[in-house]
Each structure stands twice: as C-alpha cells, then as structure tokens.
Image (cartoon, rainbow, N blue to C red; front, side, top):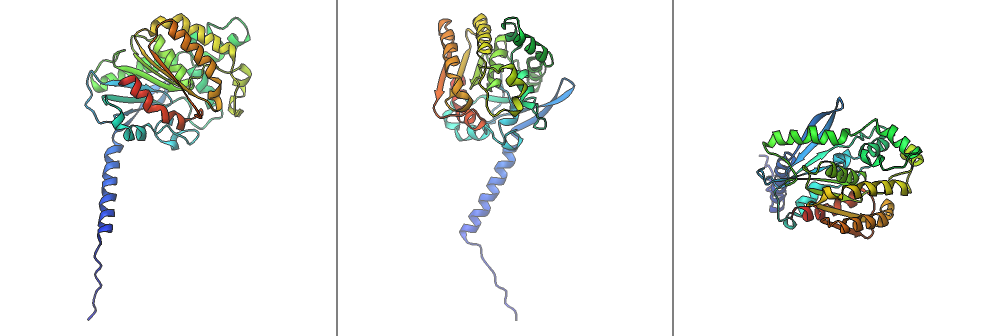
Length: 316
C-alpha cells in the first residue's frame, strides 16, 4: 500500500493566500478609479485621465482640479525621465490629512511623447503664455518668441476650455466655474496654470503653482534646450512675466493661490522672482500662500512630496 503524504497548510500560508487575494481585489477595484480618455487636439488624440481618489459621488459641490503634465503624475513608466509625482499613492496615504474629500483630479498629458529630442522645447513654448510676448520690448527676443509661439498659439488654453471642461461637464452632468474648478501645475506647467486662471477668471477659482518657472530661457538656451543639463534663465523674460501679472492682478481677486519652490537645482533660481511676485500680491491683497522648501530639487518626486500640501491648502 502506498501511503500519500498529506501536507496541511499552516496559518502563515493561509494568511499569505488571503493577503495576496486581498491585494489582488484591492488593485482590481483601484485600477477602475483612474479613467483614461482620448480627446481630439489639433487633429491628434491627446490623453486625459480622470481620477476619483476617494470614490465620491460627484455633485455640484465637488471640486475639480485640472493638472498639467498628466504623464508624470501617476506612473513613472509613462514619464519621460522615469520619475513620477505618484499622486495616487500620496492621496491614499494622506487620506486622514484631507478633511474635504469631495474632489476629482483631471490630468492632461503634455505635448511631450518621449519619442522626440524636441519634446522639451515643444512643451516650453506650448506652456509659455502668449500674452507675455506683448510685454517684451521690440527686438530679437520678441520676434523669436512670436515666430515660435505661432506654432502653438493659444491651443492649450483653448483645448482645456473648449474640449476638456465641456467633456467633464457632460460626463458628470454638472457646471464648472470658479467655485468648483482649480488648476495645478509645476515648472512651466505652473506658469501655464496661472496664465489660464488669469485669462479665464470666471472658470478657475483655485491655482496651485509648484516651482513656477518664472525666469524663462534665453533664445540661445531655447535653441539648444534638449542638449542642456541646466539653464540660467532670462531676467528680461521674468520682467515681462511680472508686467503681465501686474496688469492682471485684479483678475485674481477672490481666488485662492498656492506657490512654492525648492533650493536645489533649477529651483535655486526662483527665490528672488517668487519674492517679487509675493510683494506684488501683497500690494494688491491677493489671497495666496508661498513656501520655500529646503533641499527640494526641481523634479517630479519632489513635486509629489508637496502635492498633498497644495490640495490641503486649496481645498480645506
């Protein structure tokens, strides 16, 4: 007679099976909380993602935050530099810190696709405010920006206003306006966020600007941007940006603004310009918060570390 050896599973094995099952079910449910859509943009499809972090029932009181550079916000594998904000993980771990969870995140992929050496230059000029060009004195800088900007003139703002926002309104059967809509970005995405809020003050009531790239780039730096490891910026570009904001501070009245920057890498150039912008806001009684983060660099993982602070300030 052959005796079979019967092995019984011990408690550790049973526990591991149940744990694996729980993780599988959690990830299955979780994966449905980020919905992806492709919208037509200049005869090309551009991806947006809608993220409901706390699985709330959407209503007219829900605050929607549009976020630039969507490809960097969730998964590092979709990012051009293999780094990510990981906003989904940040919101999950900070659930107890956010008292008002009635929020939806809408992300828009940047014009970068990771396949072209000119991606960074295309993103820069797309996010650069058209209106700032008018603040340049006549000369080569104004001529160069005008010629290059004509390739993308106003399309990103129009895509958000004419395509993304109506799509979200139809999906949830709501109306978006300055009472329930904000916009968040980092670096050039932060400058674009502020610009869009200024140009459409009836639509946006909240602005989150992380490591705002106030200093622009010199024309020679723009021409060689894909090959550069660092840039020094351009004081004349900052003065043009500042003049534009100064002329439009009245459009920021009654809104809630958040700014921050670090002290390492490109961020070390932002201290003086951010201080000047803060003074401008103080003179005009603008409701804002500005914070400097020591030893924070200019890249996605650091932006992600500050993300919860942005949401908490703007929404709570």
